[in-house]
Length: 203
Image (cartoon, rainbow, N blue to C red; front, side, top):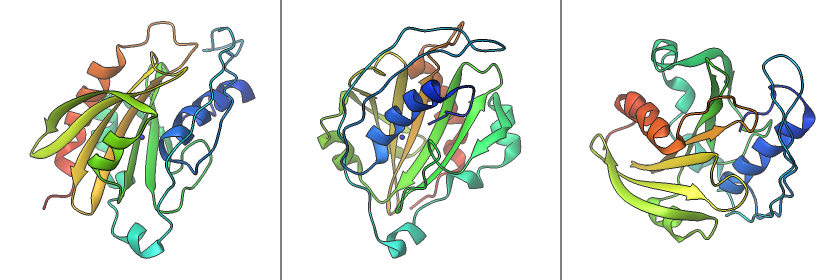
């Protein structure tokens, strides 16, 4: 399934909490969400949440087989309405062993879109207790699962987990708490995922 560096420390912590719950190492994260003043930032009241997440793979050999989401062409990224200059190849400033990640901010600065690739399967995503609202679907020729995270970021985000050879890819959208006109997260993450589906590895 971060996002962070848009303004101040607090908003970065909010995004980090959401992403770490998706890909991190068994941890309880206290989220303190507050909007940032000035410029493109709005204001928002504090939110708190405690989450636990599944452990990441630790094998470097396994990571070598994982598809790299940063290989998506810049033309496709900008064509989907994302700002290519905001690309990060880590999530919330963290490089998770066993995962390959890439994230961008949308051009209107309403949300962060992240792609997280690993050897984890759809069955593992379905079994996780920090995910909810599972909906079976397909993305191109790939079996997929739409889901949402529990807790403070439920209303802000939506994820599509897509099966690929050697694992799965999580397409994650997280609206910013200070966004003035954020999109509905599930339709928007579906639009973005469909636009990038052609770059996924095939069997």
